[in-house]
Length: 45
Image 1: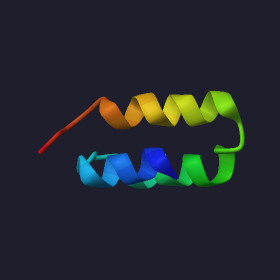
Image 2 (image 1 turned 90 degrees about the horizontal axis):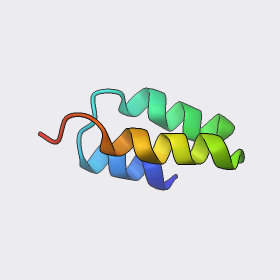
Image 3 (image 1 turned 180 degrees about the horizontal axis):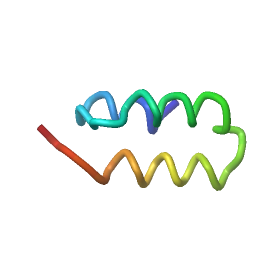
């Protein structure tokens, strides 16, 4: 759930999608890294 938390703190516009992907596919290491990278790309405000 780390990518979801980071996306929430950074107020990412796609935080819901990141959270859902992380929840349902987070067991997959590849998907987890994709979510982690995605949460750093985007809005910071």
